[in-house]
Image (cartoon, rainbow, N blue to C red; front, side):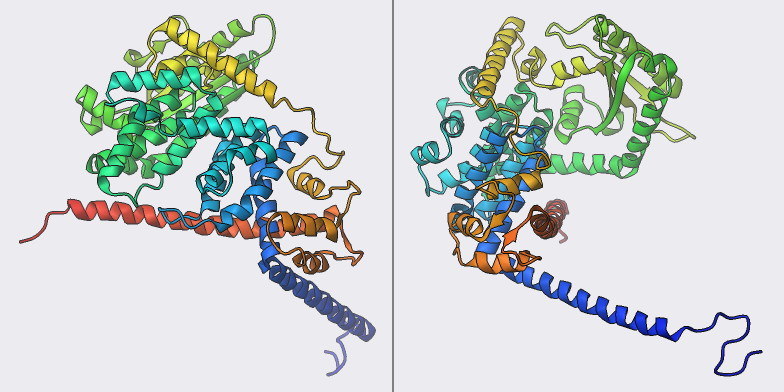
Length: 559
């Protein structure tokens, strides 16, 4: 046993000088931490200045949009950046919308949805400027002069579409069909999609209107815009328009179907994920199939509320007799070559054999649209399988199997099938309108034909792209004068730039490098993520409150 105050023989001797060094290092680290913390606090204060706030909005919005755009050239970047600089100060100055939202939030949500749909820069800019035009703060001529002819033309087209339903006296099936046909024939397809996104945004925020107006708008959307979304191939948008219209037109029926479907989803959603993984693993591990294909994907889906109600009413079924609320879609990309279409079809049948080895197929539900395509060219294999196990009864699951080419023609908006879903049942008429839509798309592509990005090497991602746009003289640094200029363009005091530069400029050379600017952008992203989460929580709470209100009105009163 060692002497008290000295280390025991088995222990390593204490080295006091190291303890002193460690203390000095600890003090040094604490000072460094305090410096960084002070700088972070200073950065937050700088971002609270009017100029700082506007730059945060500009950088954050630009990055969010470009991250969702799969193709973005240098000219598209400049167009989007120019539009944001023009629009942000105007949108900040506008009063709240009738539904309680601020115009900037609405404009950016429209633009993000358009970017998610992979629309081009002109369409996204038109979506932002639509709110600016409606606010009466800028004229179409100013848009033409300051942004460009293409964006102004698209904006004008979308404004013309705004009240298309007023062209008919009664909105019956025949007149609604005529209106859809008119839109597809005479309007830029991008203007149609922009108008559809505007209608979806409106349907998501109808609660401030009186009930009779909600129902009038919903009838228009159900008759004209939901089928039109099918016609241009945006199925997800069409389904949401249908469900929202159904909800406002028949709230009690919607609640009934929604409650029933949710009772399956709470149990079945993890199951659907499990079935996706199980099927994908089986397909990708099959040697025969892998020799024919270069890629296989499996997607799951739940049936929409409106389509479920249609099935209940049309077929006279009870809810427990609706079996296809779960579904999987298998999309196969065959090996490229001369016979790729033939190989793809063989691969589809092979995928069916694999599915039969996993689950029991219901023979009466099998439909072979590959051997016998629909008259509009639609091809796919449709089958239903029984996924019940261990004595548990579960709804049947629908599975569609098709090649990537078949999927593009069925759901991509370029096939006659898309027009057929929009209500055009004459194959020749559908074919003619398909040609018109393709020509319009090609013309739009030519008008906004972009050269490959001229951004220097190493500045290809969206974060470096916005740095490059702020660095107007191209010297690889952002000066305080360049920062002042962009703040003044955003309608803020240029002097805020000096304080912002001082806080962001970590090496105190009076310039912002790409690394220093990237640190700033990470702070911006953090702030916007927190704001987004807060907004999502509010939406979810509002949805719960609406459902509770509907449930309360359906409860019988006592006495």
